[in-house]
Length: 308
Image 1 (cartoon, one colour):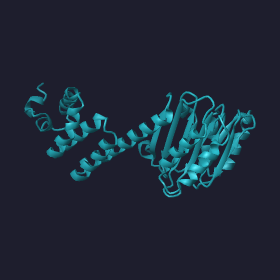
Image 2 (cartoon, rainbow, N blue to C red):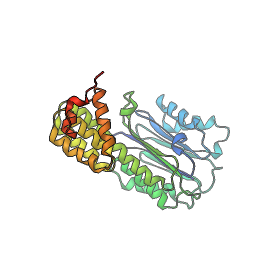
Image 3 (cartoon, rainbow, N blue to C red):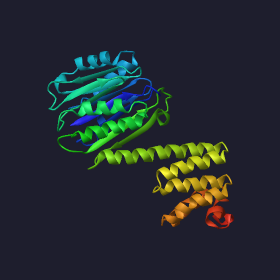
């Protein structure tokens, strides 16, 4: 089975898709989403064209119901397909062909469509719908995760678990995927794909805080940068690279005390030697000033400068 939910957040205007399946890399073929346009999940003997065509129809101004109906009309075998769609205004549409492997059904509600096929037990779309409705007012990302967990708790795929994906996009397109895609993570093969999906999402959000911190460093906001770096490293305490860049960046702008405190995590990792080597290479490449070496490693900065 594949089960999914496509949704729009009424508070932020963000669009999102959460999907899971017992198939390799469901995130590669099933979710289609675009800021300022809509979101589509195409599943059940996937015809990827339904994602592209339905999005194109909504981009042209069609309601999801019309856009999806036009795409279904072009399908030579619509009875085996299942599709859910939501637009930027929260309008929704869904299709479950009568040839989908039982149990198969969908539920639509205000700003969302939940669909599932090959369920172990009936009621998966209803469980997702109930969860999504009950969590109104919470962040879209959390609501999507809760809906996926509800689907799994209801029985999930009769075949078991394998892959999952979650995408959330900004309400308006900027043309920059790094800005438009608020979260974009997928698990292609795992015995516990939803657990792994949450871990990767936490890591992705921590990376975003790291980007914010880097921008604050560039703006000269030491206090703001230190706080953003702290948030990133606390979100992913086992990810030593966050502490490395935190220390290097803060040392580079002269925040030596904050930098040395961050570097302690690098020293405690048991891999300080290779991170120290990388720090020297960053100096050689001109990414940070030579003064970061004595600040963090206690070595004379002149010894780190390239000589030829």
